[in-house]
Length: 160
Image (cartoon, rainbow, N blue to C red; front, side):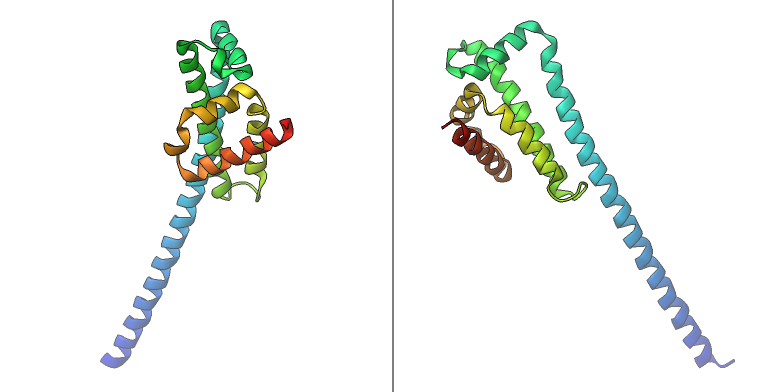
């Protein structure tokens, strides 16, 4: 075997090694992407579970029920409680949007579920009052503000 033939075999082995390395990187990227999608879904579910914890204290529940009807009728301290709850609700909605964008669920499923849940939520006048007065529109990410504005507009159109 000549030195030229050995060099040709070495080039072939090197090329095969590069192809195998690229396949390994592709597999790892796919695996990492799958893990990120699962983490997004878990984050969404955790946010929804945390919202349910607000219902453990009867005094807090009473504030939330009155706040849904009229944000303006709450005291300053109650407005603070209601505002914190609202922020958590809309942060949970953002999780629906992240899951939608991750393609973890079929197209539209997460967004449809999120919109349905939050359309019902903002059907209360106090919830919409809070949104319009909160100033959150300038502090939250644009994609979330647009999604919330859409749901709020749908709820207001339904009331009109």
